[in-house]
Image (cartoon, rainbow, N blue to C red):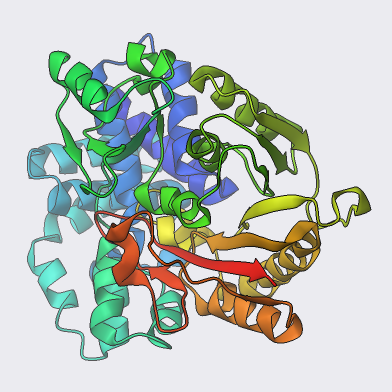
Length: 448
């Protein structure tokens, strides 16, 4: 009889390879379809296998390539993922006996391959040892070594190396493989950080304040059914990374202002804007898709926020009725998402270097259109959750060169001192990804 969690994980991994879907969506779908048959332990194991194999795919394939006489392209997608899962269990999961990993992989190969497949899988997995990882660390070319030991596409290692030292690049790529904790933002319209952490303590939920400069952001361990937690349903918090929250702190909106969040869904930053405005004034929140605009409404309603007006709108299309009416604008543009790979490992395999010109064209167009909506004297924050200079410094510098009526706005005192160390000489903020923070870029501009 096949091990159900492993079989479901295998199906999910094959789907991810064939359809280029998103890891979290595939996991949610599998759990929803099989929730009557799965225990909490099963769900945890399935999630571990899917995220683990997706994170370490390049490294796992390198180990398969070393031991296999058959080229990877000739191995069926099912058997290839059986091997990836088996090697991941052997090398990365200490609590799984090697014998169990091998035997269950052979059983899967019998079901999803043919007789020779199971022998092939058995032969490969019995050769795998800790020496396989050690061998990769001895690769002489430094960029190739970083790529294969951190499971990062070589193009990305090379791209990051263009404006960083190799030690920094390696640290970033290692951070892509770390398991992120959940960072949440306390809704101070409803509860103080002190009161909220007391509620967590009463429920025996461990937490950690990320920085004393920002007590409303805390990290918690993964909780099953987070959205069913009473504290969530009462609107006491929202899931949001500290780096994403800093975009709002940097914009620093005031109560009573008219603010535009031009690429707003699902509404994490939008609702933080409203909290900083003490739920006074008005925020117009745009997104391209109706179903995502609905997410902004849902989050605002749950958090008890009344000043957000979501609209389904394409921000790349100029609209003269908004000409120079906004006090402040948050422009968190679509991007390649390189800064959030530790949470979305599928980005490593779905995004390509060839995607850069297309996404930067969208980013330039958004900034060019949206700047017309800002009042003279108003401020705009341009941000991405990417860390490539083509999407960040290059975009803003080109914009400033073409728009002498804009300048970088230098804060006298940042409302989150924690981030001062990330400011460069030009006044931009570049936060490289780490086990603590997502990678982000921000620039605050003022219309003269």
